[in-house]
Image (cartoon, rainbow over all chains, first blue to last red; front, side, top):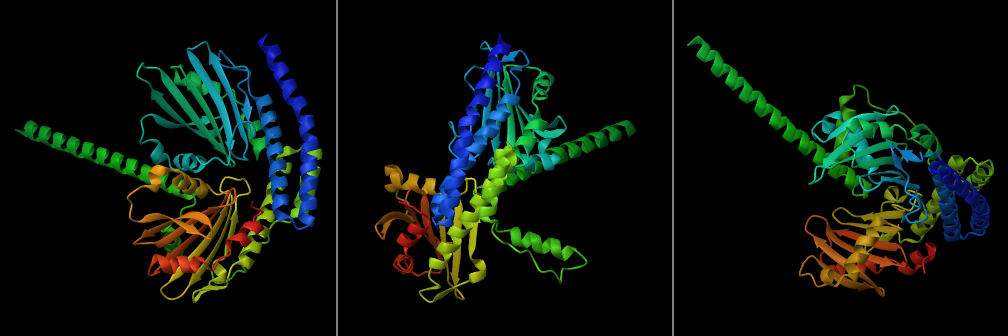
Length: 201
Length: 255
Protein backbone atom coordinates (compact mmCIF):
# COMPACT_ATOMS: atom_id res chain seq x y z
CA UNK A 1 0.00 0.00 0.00
CA UNK A 2 2.84 2.36 0.93
CA UNK A 3 4.57 1.59 -2.35
CA UNK A 4 1.41 2.40 -4.30
CA UNK A 5 1.05 5.72 -2.49
CA UNK A 6 4.70 6.50 -3.19
CA UNK A 7 4.26 5.66 -6.89
CA UNK A 8 1.19 7.93 -7.07
CA UNK A 9 3.17 10.77 -5.46
CA UNK A 10 5.98 10.37 -8.00
CA UNK A 11 3.51 10.33 -10.93
CA UNK A 12 1.79 13.48 -9.62
CA UNK A 13 5.13 15.23 -9.25
CA UNK A 14 6.24 14.34 -12.78
CA UNK A 15 2.88 15.27 -14.33
CA UNK A 16 3.16 18.72 -12.74
CA UNK A 17 6.37 19.35 -14.67
CA UNK A 18 4.64 19.61 -18.06
CA UNK A 19 2.64 22.69 -17.08
CA UNK A 20 5.79 24.33 -15.76
CA UNK A 21 7.73 23.77 -18.99
CA UNK A 22 5.48 26.19 -20.88
CA UNK A 23 5.84 28.65 -18.04
CA UNK A 24 9.65 28.57 -18.18
CA UNK A 25 9.70 29.01 -21.97
CA UNK A 26 7.32 31.97 -21.70
CA UNK A 27 9.48 33.55 -19.00
CA UNK A 28 12.64 33.13 -21.07
CA UNK A 29 10.89 34.68 -24.10
CA UNK A 30 9.75 37.59 -21.95
CA UNK A 31 13.27 38.02 -20.56
CA UNK A 32 14.78 38.09 -24.05
CA UNK A 33 12.32 40.65 -25.43
CA UNK A 34 12.58 42.85 -22.31
CA UNK A 35 16.36 42.76 -22.50
CA UNK A 36 16.37 43.63 -26.20
CA UNK A 37 14.08 46.59 -25.55
CA UNK A 38 16.34 47.80 -22.73
CA UNK A 39 13.90 47.04 -19.92
CA UNK A 40 16.51 45.47 -17.66
CA UNK A 41 14.40 45.29 -14.52
CA UNK A 42 11.65 43.41 -16.33
CA UNK A 43 14.22 41.06 -17.89
CA UNK A 44 15.65 40.41 -14.45
CA UNK A 45 12.23 39.67 -12.96
CA UNK A 46 11.33 37.28 -15.80
CA UNK A 47 14.66 35.45 -15.39
CA UNK A 48 14.14 35.16 -11.65
CA UNK A 49 10.72 33.65 -12.29
CA UNK A 50 12.20 31.22 -14.82
CA UNK A 51 14.91 30.28 -12.29
CA UNK A 52 12.29 29.66 -9.65
CA UNK A 53 10.37 27.33 -11.97
CA UNK A 54 13.55 25.45 -12.93
CA UNK A 55 14.46 25.13 -9.25
CA UNK A 56 11.03 23.66 -8.59
CA UNK A 57 11.52 21.09 -11.30
CA UNK A 58 14.93 20.09 -9.94
CA UNK A 59 13.37 19.89 -6.49
CA UNK A 60 10.64 17.59 -7.79
CA UNK A 61 13.25 15.35 -9.38
CA UNK A 62 15.10 15.20 -6.05
CA UNK A 63 11.88 14.32 -4.21
CA UNK A 64 11.29 11.50 -6.67
CA UNK A 65 14.76 10.16 -5.77
CA UNK A 66 14.32 10.25 -2.00
CA UNK A 67 13.39 6.99 -0.27
CA UNK A 68 9.75 6.34 0.64
CA UNK A 69 10.83 4.98 4.01
CA UNK A 70 13.61 5.91 6.36
CA UNK A 71 14.49 2.84 8.39
CA UNK A 72 11.08 1.73 9.55
CA UNK A 73 9.63 5.24 9.35
CA UNK A 74 7.26 5.86 6.44
CA UNK A 75 7.20 9.29 4.79
CA UNK A 76 4.59 11.67 6.14
CA UNK A 77 1.98 12.10 3.45
CA UNK A 78 1.67 15.66 2.21
CA UNK A 79 4.86 16.70 3.96
CA UNK A 80 6.92 17.06 0.77
CA UNK A 81 7.93 20.63 0.30
CA UNK A 82 10.07 22.32 -2.34
CA UNK A 83 11.29 25.74 -3.42
CA UNK A 84 8.71 28.31 -4.36
CA UNK A 85 5.98 26.65 -2.36
CA UNK A 86 6.80 27.98 1.07
CA UNK A 87 10.34 29.26 1.17
CA UNK A 88 11.19 32.94 1.18
CA UNK A 89 13.92 33.19 -1.44
CA UNK A 90 14.57 32.05 -4.96
CA UNK A 91 16.93 29.21 -4.11
CA UNK A 92 16.51 25.48 -4.32
CA UNK A 93 14.78 23.98 -1.31
CA UNK A 94 13.57 20.41 -0.75
CA UNK A 95 12.13 18.83 2.36
CA UNK A 96 10.66 15.41 3.15
CA UNK A 97 9.55 14.18 6.58
CA UNK A 98 9.24 10.67 7.96
CA UNK A 99 7.55 9.54 11.19
CA UNK A 100 6.81 6.37 13.11
CA UNK A 101 3.77 6.95 15.34
CA UNK A 102 4.94 9.52 17.85
CA UNK A 103 8.10 7.72 18.88
CA UNK A 104 10.51 8.59 16.12
CA UNK A 105 10.72 11.08 13.28
CA UNK A 106 13.23 12.22 10.73
CA UNK A 107 13.54 14.64 7.84
CA UNK A 108 15.74 15.37 4.86
CA UNK A 109 16.30 18.96 3.81
CA UNK A 110 18.33 20.27 0.89
CA UNK A 111 19.01 24.00 0.57
CA UNK A 112 21.11 25.55 -2.17
CA UNK A 113 23.24 28.62 -1.43
CA UNK A 114 22.59 28.02 2.25
CA UNK A 115 23.93 30.66 4.64
CA UNK A 116 24.98 27.83 6.99
CA UNK A 117 27.19 26.27 4.34
CA UNK A 118 30.37 28.19 5.08
CA UNK A 119 30.21 27.34 8.78
CA UNK A 120 29.84 23.61 8.17
CA UNK A 121 32.61 23.63 5.59
CA UNK A 122 34.91 25.41 8.05
CA UNK A 123 34.26 22.71 10.63
CA UNK A 124 34.84 19.93 8.13
CA UNK A 125 38.07 21.33 6.76
CA UNK A 126 39.56 21.96 10.20
CA UNK A 127 39.25 18.65 12.06
CA UNK A 128 40.64 20.14 15.28
CA UNK A 129 37.40 22.10 15.69
CA UNK A 130 35.26 19.05 15.20
CA UNK A 131 36.94 17.18 18.03
CA UNK A 132 36.60 19.99 20.56
CA UNK A 133 32.90 19.23 21.04
CA UNK A 134 32.07 15.81 22.45
CA UNK A 135 28.67 15.84 20.77
CA UNK A 136 30.01 16.56 17.31
CA UNK A 137 32.03 14.41 15.00
CA UNK A 138 32.92 13.98 11.36
CA UNK A 139 31.47 11.04 9.52
CA UNK A 140 31.21 9.94 5.91
CA UNK A 141 27.97 9.39 4.08
CA UNK A 142 28.61 7.66 0.78
CA UNK A 143 32.15 9.04 0.74
CA UNK A 144 31.00 12.61 1.40
CA UNK A 145 32.27 14.24 4.58
CA UNK A 146 29.49 15.22 6.95
CA UNK A 147 29.11 16.62 10.44
CA UNK A 148 27.13 14.59 12.98
CA UNK A 149 25.74 16.44 15.99
CA UNK A 150 24.04 14.62 18.83
CA UNK A 151 21.78 16.12 21.45
CA UNK A 152 19.74 14.58 24.25
CA UNK A 153 16.60 16.15 25.68
CA UNK A 154 15.39 16.20 29.32
CA UNK A 155 13.70 12.83 28.90
CA UNK A 156 16.84 11.20 27.56
CA UNK A 157 15.63 11.03 23.94
CA UNK A 158 18.44 11.40 21.43
CA UNK A 159 18.35 13.63 18.38
CA UNK A 160 20.87 13.59 15.57
CA UNK A 161 21.67 16.18 12.93
CA UNK A 162 23.79 15.18 9.96
CA UNK A 163 24.92 18.11 7.81
CA UNK A 164 26.49 17.32 4.49
CA UNK A 165 27.71 20.19 2.29
CA UNK A 166 28.18 19.75 -1.45
CA UNK A 167 28.78 22.24 -4.27
CA UNK A 168 26.94 25.29 -2.95
CA UNK A 169 24.22 23.30 -1.20
CA UNK A 170 23.63 21.78 2.20
CA UNK A 171 21.86 18.49 2.88
CA UNK A 172 20.59 18.08 6.41
CA UNK A 173 19.26 14.82 7.82
CA UNK A 174 17.58 15.15 11.20
CA UNK A 175 16.45 12.22 13.30
CA UNK A 176 14.75 12.15 16.70
CA UNK A 177 13.81 9.16 18.80
CA UNK A 178 16.46 6.70 17.61
CA UNK A 179 19.08 6.13 20.27
CA UNK A 180 21.60 4.16 18.21
CA UNK A 181 24.00 6.41 16.30
CA UNK A 182 24.92 3.68 13.81
CA UNK A 183 21.27 3.15 12.95
CA UNK A 184 20.93 6.86 12.18
CA UNK A 185 24.08 6.83 10.01
CA UNK A 186 22.69 3.77 8.23
CA UNK A 187 19.50 5.69 7.46
CA UNK A 188 21.47 8.65 6.11
CA UNK A 189 23.34 6.25 3.85
CA UNK A 190 20.06 5.33 2.18
CA UNK A 191 19.85 8.88 0.76
CA UNK A 192 21.04 8.88 -2.88
CA UNK A 193 23.56 11.68 -2.31
CA UNK A 194 25.44 11.11 -5.60
CA UNK A 195 22.33 11.60 -7.69
CA UNK A 196 21.26 14.66 -5.69
CA UNK A 197 24.71 16.24 -6.12
CA UNK A 198 24.54 15.67 -9.87
CA UNK A 199 21.14 17.35 -10.09
CA UNK A 200 22.08 20.42 -8.10
CA UNK A 201 25.51 21.22 -9.54
CA UNK B 1 61.76 7.92 50.07
CA UNK B 2 62.61 7.16 46.45
CA UNK B 3 59.07 5.87 45.84
CA UNK B 4 57.69 8.99 47.47
CA UNK B 5 59.68 11.21 45.04
CA UNK B 6 58.52 9.18 42.05
CA UNK B 7 54.92 9.51 43.23
CA UNK B 8 55.22 13.31 43.58
CA UNK B 9 56.79 13.53 40.09
CA UNK B 10 53.96 11.50 38.62
CA UNK B 11 51.34 13.71 40.29
CA UNK B 12 53.08 16.84 38.97
CA UNK B 13 53.26 15.44 35.43
CA UNK B 14 49.58 14.49 35.54
CA UNK B 15 48.60 17.94 36.82
CA UNK B 16 50.66 19.59 34.09
CA UNK B 17 49.20 17.48 31.25
CA UNK B 18 45.64 17.92 32.60
CA UNK B 19 46.20 21.68 32.67
CA UNK B 20 47.54 21.61 29.13
CA UNK B 21 44.58 19.59 27.93
CA UNK B 22 41.97 21.89 29.46
CA UNK B 23 43.92 24.88 28.13
CA UNK B 24 44.06 23.44 24.62
CA UNK B 25 40.35 22.61 24.78
CA UNK B 26 39.67 26.20 25.80
CA UNK B 27 41.80 27.45 22.92
CA UNK B 28 40.05 25.17 20.48
CA UNK B 29 36.65 26.30 21.71
CA UNK B 30 37.66 29.95 21.32
CA UNK B 31 39.07 29.25 17.85
CA UNK B 32 35.83 27.55 16.87
CA UNK B 33 33.73 30.45 18.16
CA UNK B 34 35.93 32.91 16.30
CA UNK B 35 35.68 30.92 13.08
CA UNK B 36 31.90 30.77 13.37
CA UNK B 37 31.73 34.54 13.97
CA UNK B 38 33.93 35.09 10.91
CA UNK B 39 31.77 32.86 8.80
CA UNK B 40 28.59 34.67 9.87
CA UNK B 41 30.23 38.03 9.13
CA UNK B 42 31.26 36.79 5.70
CA UNK B 43 27.79 35.48 4.88
CA UNK B 44 26.19 38.75 5.94
CA UNK B 45 28.64 40.70 3.80
CA UNK B 46 30.53 42.45 6.55
CA UNK B 47 34.03 43.52 5.71
CA UNK B 48 36.96 41.47 6.83
CA UNK B 49 39.38 44.02 8.17
CA UNK B 50 42.23 41.60 8.60
CA UNK B 51 42.02 40.15 5.09
CA UNK B 52 44.64 42.49 3.65
CA UNK B 53 47.09 41.80 6.43
CA UNK B 54 46.76 38.03 5.97
CA UNK B 55 47.32 38.17 2.22
CA UNK B 56 50.35 40.39 2.70
CA UNK B 57 51.84 37.92 5.12
CA UNK B 58 51.29 34.98 2.82
CA UNK B 59 52.85 36.70 -0.17
CA UNK B 60 55.88 37.81 1.83
CA UNK B 61 56.52 34.24 2.98
CA UNK B 62 57.03 33.15 -0.66
CA UNK B 63 60.56 33.39 -2.04
CA UNK B 64 59.32 34.58 -5.46
CA UNK B 65 56.90 37.45 -5.83
CA UNK B 66 54.67 37.91 -8.86
CA UNK B 67 55.99 40.65 -11.18
CA UNK B 68 54.12 39.79 -14.39
CA UNK B 69 50.62 38.83 -15.45
CA UNK B 70 47.78 40.58 -17.21
CA UNK B 71 45.18 39.86 -14.55
CA UNK B 72 41.73 38.60 -15.45
CA UNK B 73 39.37 39.88 -18.08
CA UNK B 74 36.14 40.39 -16.23
CA UNK B 75 33.37 40.57 -18.76
CA UNK B 76 29.81 40.26 -17.54
CA UNK B 77 28.06 37.13 -18.83
CA UNK B 78 26.38 37.52 -22.24
CA UNK B 79 22.68 37.70 -21.44
CA UNK B 80 21.28 36.69 -24.85
CA UNK B 81 23.70 33.80 -25.18
CA UNK B 82 22.83 32.50 -21.73
CA UNK B 83 19.08 32.77 -22.35
CA UNK B 84 19.57 30.72 -25.56
CA UNK B 85 21.66 28.13 -23.66
CA UNK B 86 19.02 27.93 -20.95
CA UNK B 87 16.33 27.30 -23.56
CA UNK B 88 18.31 24.52 -25.21
CA UNK B 89 19.19 22.87 -21.90
CA UNK B 90 15.61 23.16 -20.71
CA UNK B 91 14.20 21.59 -23.87
CA UNK B 92 16.61 18.69 -23.36
CA UNK B 93 15.38 18.37 -19.77
CA UNK B 94 18.86 19.21 -18.55
CA UNK B 95 17.62 21.32 -15.65
CA UNK B 96 21.02 21.63 -13.99
CA UNK B 97 22.52 23.38 -17.04
CA UNK B 98 19.34 25.40 -17.58
CA UNK B 99 19.62 26.64 -13.99
CA UNK B 100 23.25 27.60 -14.44
CA UNK B 101 22.56 29.53 -17.66
CA UNK B 102 19.60 31.41 -16.19
CA UNK B 103 21.71 32.39 -13.19
CA UNK B 104 24.44 33.64 -15.51
CA UNK B 105 21.85 35.64 -17.47
CA UNK B 106 20.54 37.18 -14.23
CA UNK B 107 24.10 38.05 -13.28
CA UNK B 108 24.63 39.73 -16.67
CA UNK B 109 21.44 41.78 -16.37
CA UNK B 110 22.22 42.78 -12.77
CA UNK B 111 25.74 43.87 -13.76
CA UNK B 112 24.25 46.12 -16.45
CA UNK B 113 21.71 47.59 -14.01
CA UNK B 114 24.56 48.23 -11.57
CA UNK B 115 26.76 49.89 -14.18
CA UNK B 116 23.84 52.12 -15.25
CA UNK B 117 23.35 53.22 -11.65
CA UNK B 118 27.08 53.96 -11.28
CA UNK B 119 26.95 56.10 -14.44
CA UNK B 120 24.16 58.16 -12.85
CA UNK B 121 26.05 58.84 -9.62
CA UNK B 122 27.94 62.15 -9.28
CA UNK B 123 31.69 62.19 -9.96
CA UNK B 124 32.40 64.37 -6.95
CA UNK B 125 30.55 65.23 -3.76
CA UNK B 126 31.33 68.39 -1.77
CA UNK B 127 34.94 68.42 -3.00
CA UNK B 128 35.49 64.69 -2.58
CA UNK B 129 36.41 63.01 -5.86
CA UNK B 130 35.26 59.52 -6.81
CA UNK B 131 37.80 56.69 -6.78
CA UNK B 132 36.89 54.89 -10.05
CA UNK B 133 38.90 51.75 -9.30
CA UNK B 134 36.80 51.19 -6.19
CA UNK B 135 33.49 51.20 -8.08
CA UNK B 136 31.86 47.89 -7.42
CA UNK B 137 28.80 45.99 -8.60
CA UNK B 138 28.14 42.69 -6.85
CA UNK B 139 25.42 40.18 -7.42
CA UNK B 140 24.78 36.65 -6.23
CA UNK B 141 21.99 36.20 -8.81
CA UNK B 142 19.99 34.17 -6.31
CA UNK B 143 18.08 36.80 -4.41
CA UNK B 144 19.72 36.13 -1.06
CA UNK B 145 22.26 38.92 -0.95
CA UNK B 146 20.75 40.62 -3.98
CA UNK B 147 22.44 43.32 -6.01
CA UNK B 148 24.79 45.83 -4.42
CA UNK B 149 26.42 48.85 -6.05
CA UNK B 150 29.20 50.80 -4.36
CA UNK B 151 31.16 53.97 -5.05
CA UNK B 152 33.79 55.65 -2.90
CA UNK B 153 34.67 59.38 -2.77
CA UNK B 154 37.85 60.38 -0.97
CA UNK B 155 40.27 63.16 -0.11
CA UNK B 156 43.26 62.94 2.20
CA UNK B 157 41.31 62.74 5.41
CA UNK B 158 37.67 62.41 4.37
CA UNK B 159 35.77 59.54 2.82
CA UNK B 160 32.22 59.08 1.60
CA UNK B 161 30.99 55.66 0.57
CA UNK B 162 27.66 55.19 -1.17
CA UNK B 163 26.01 51.79 -1.37
CA UNK B 164 22.79 50.93 -3.13
CA UNK B 165 21.31 47.53 -2.32
CA UNK B 166 18.44 45.80 -4.01
CA UNK B 167 16.81 42.71 -2.47
CA UNK B 168 19.53 43.04 0.17
CA UNK B 169 19.61 41.37 3.58
CA UNK B 170 20.50 44.70 5.15
CA UNK B 171 17.11 46.09 4.20
CA UNK B 172 15.12 43.92 6.59
CA UNK B 173 16.98 45.13 9.69
CA UNK B 174 16.56 48.79 8.75
CA UNK B 175 12.87 48.32 7.97
CA UNK B 176 12.43 46.51 11.28
CA UNK B 177 13.97 49.49 13.04
CA UNK B 178 11.76 51.98 11.23
CA UNK B 179 8.54 50.05 11.75
CA UNK B 180 9.18 49.29 15.40
CA UNK B 181 8.01 51.84 17.93
CA UNK B 182 10.23 50.30 20.60
CA UNK B 183 13.38 50.98 18.65
CA UNK B 184 12.28 54.39 17.51
CA UNK B 185 11.78 55.60 21.06
CA UNK B 186 15.15 54.23 22.13
CA UNK B 187 17.34 56.57 24.14
CA UNK B 188 20.39 55.58 22.09
CA UNK B 189 22.19 58.88 21.41
CA UNK B 190 24.01 57.51 18.37
CA UNK B 191 21.06 56.89 16.07
CA UNK B 192 17.96 58.76 15.08
CA UNK B 193 15.19 58.80 12.51
CA UNK B 194 15.61 61.30 9.69
CA UNK B 195 13.72 62.20 6.54
CA UNK B 196 15.75 62.25 3.35
CA UNK B 197 14.10 63.53 0.16
CA UNK B 198 10.72 62.39 1.46
CA UNK B 199 11.92 58.95 2.59
CA UNK B 200 12.25 57.85 6.20
CA UNK B 201 15.72 56.71 7.17
CA UNK B 202 18.14 56.22 10.04
CA UNK B 203 21.21 58.33 10.75
CA UNK B 204 23.82 56.69 12.97
CA UNK B 205 27.08 57.92 14.42
CA UNK B 206 30.03 55.96 15.67
CA UNK B 207 33.36 57.42 16.87
CA UNK B 208 35.30 54.85 14.87
CA UNK B 209 33.37 54.70 11.57
CA UNK B 210 31.69 58.11 11.50
CA UNK B 211 28.21 58.79 10.11
CA UNK B 212 25.95 56.31 8.38
CA UNK B 213 22.68 57.18 6.68
CA UNK B 214 20.41 54.25 5.70
CA UNK B 215 17.31 54.96 3.64
CA UNK B 216 15.05 52.16 2.38
CA UNK B 217 13.13 53.01 -0.80
CA UNK B 218 10.78 51.29 -3.20
CA UNK B 219 9.74 47.76 -2.32
CA UNK B 220 13.10 46.18 -1.75
CA UNK B 221 15.95 48.68 -2.04
CA UNK B 222 18.17 50.63 0.29
CA UNK B 223 20.47 53.63 -0.06
CA UNK B 224 23.38 53.76 2.41
CA UNK B 225 25.86 56.57 2.80
CA UNK B 226 28.86 56.28 5.12
CA UNK B 227 30.94 59.34 5.88
CA UNK B 228 34.26 59.43 7.68
CA UNK B 229 35.50 62.69 9.20
CA UNK B 230 32.33 64.66 8.53
CA UNK B 231 32.05 67.43 11.08
CA UNK B 232 28.35 67.25 11.80
CA UNK B 233 25.11 65.58 10.85
CA UNK B 234 24.25 68.66 8.80
CA UNK B 235 27.40 68.14 6.75
CA UNK B 236 26.67 64.47 6.01
CA UNK B 237 23.02 65.24 5.21
CA UNK B 238 24.15 68.01 2.88
CA UNK B 239 26.47 65.54 1.10
CA UNK B 240 23.57 63.09 0.80
CA UNK B 241 21.47 65.73 -0.97
CA UNK B 242 23.76 65.46 -4.01
CA UNK B 243 22.45 61.95 -4.76
CA UNK B 244 19.33 61.56 -6.88
CA UNK B 245 17.44 58.73 -5.21
CA UNK B 246 14.56 58.96 -7.73
CA UNK B 247 16.96 58.31 -10.59
CA UNK B 248 18.38 55.23 -8.80
CA UNK B 249 14.86 54.04 -8.09
CA UNK B 250 13.98 54.32 -11.77
CA UNK B 251 17.07 52.36 -12.84
CA UNK B 252 16.15 49.57 -10.42
CA UNK B 253 12.59 49.53 -11.75
CA UNK B 254 11.30 50.20 -8.25
CA UNK B 255 7.80 51.57 -7.62
